[in-house]
Length: 237
Length: 237
Image (tube, rainbow over the protein chains, first blue to last red):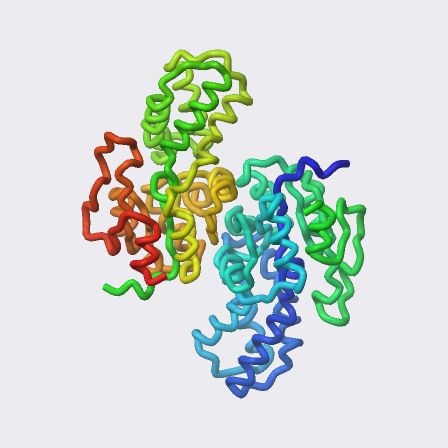
């Protein structure tokens, strides 16, 4: 089936566009060094990410009213500060650490790939990150979005259908005119069910050297690649 | 009072950033010529704009559920096609005309001014235009927004407070960290009441040669200028 009808590309961000793990580890290590705090910051980062999906569940189920990801990240951070026996941090320091997620670095191929793709398509975020997180990240990293959308403007965390369908609606497009670009098979599966076209970028070190999931395409996604520039090649940009 | 705390600039778009009147007249004239339809297209454009505020009223009051501006514009367009005794247009042609609002041209100072302002501030739309309208306009006109916000993501048309407060909230900022840039005194007054800082750009020909309103600053706005580049000068960009 042709991809000629695709008018907009929607991007998962954490892992697909930015290398959250090395970025957060680096931020935490620097903070620890500056403050004289010893901890296993790689483990701390992996623990923080492991609380990411569970933290959204109560909101997804409607047991809790809408909260932006910054709030959920901060709650997890406070849990982990205690669990890792770190003490003496003030509110400002905790806020600074929490905003490490606003300062994530792109993968080396990201900015070139997005810049090429933007010449032909509308580029939108389709992330669980909140708008301020994504806007600050884009300013820091030079990510050329046309629209910062996703969970917050749709008041629904992925993989709830409203998040994907709402993004299409904001752009006044049908789902088949949208393509999700993601490093995660489950995200692509949710999008495809709703009519989105799909592009998988394999990011085999997103979760570090011992990554288990998403090391291969688990379905016949429309595009299967290993970089954003390869997505641009595949779409003739 | 210092403007040092301002972190983001929020822009009224129709009239402030783009010259809607000459753009729409030009689109309509071209369409009329191509289709052999005679009409007073300047009057048609002014009539279309005169239905703009009334068309939002039922939504503002809650008598009608949320509708994006494209829908309201199209309803007004159909009313005016009949009133101007134009016949024979098909749905596709009506859609094309309605999307003239997606193809508005910037004022000559706009792109340079925004580009300079973006080096120091987060730039967001605070328009009653819907997201697809604003995104398509930005792609066409080269407007360098960091975030396309405003009425639709806040489900509230200006001057309802939720539109201004929601924009600040999306960026995780307090109202006093936001400045509205607008060519309309009433918009600035609504924003100031909520804590926004204010910049007035006088656009004395927005409504054509016989414009009555907004030819002068009607209050002591923080910045009073006649161009976007002057706003950049005033903010040291």
